[in-house]
Image (cartoon, rainbow, N blue to C red; front, side, top):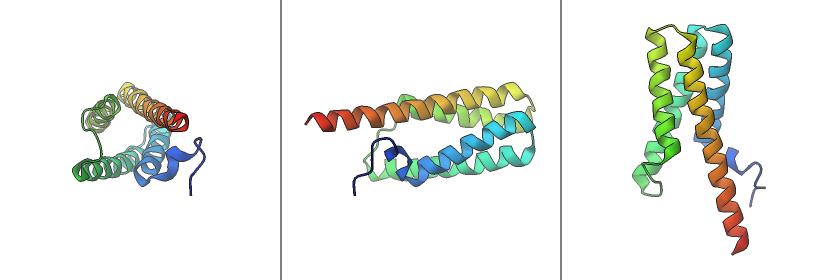
Length: 117
């Protein structure tokens, strides 16, 4: 069954995990609690593991702008456990938002390209 283009992004487990992790980052920015940072780290770790699995199958590019932004945001999130500075969480959230935006843009661009065929 073909999903509508507007919800197609949300069909994969790594995308759902990413969105849940992003929600926990936003909560963590306002609450600055260890638990919310840990929850976001767990969900983003699942996302990295799933992406690594897909890359190992050979149907994904490794060096994409959104992957690089995601890894940098992930590293900044890890650093925020040692340096308890809200700015690190904000930087991490910005990088994750960029990753999300780029991924949605890529999915929509591919949808439009496929419609033209």
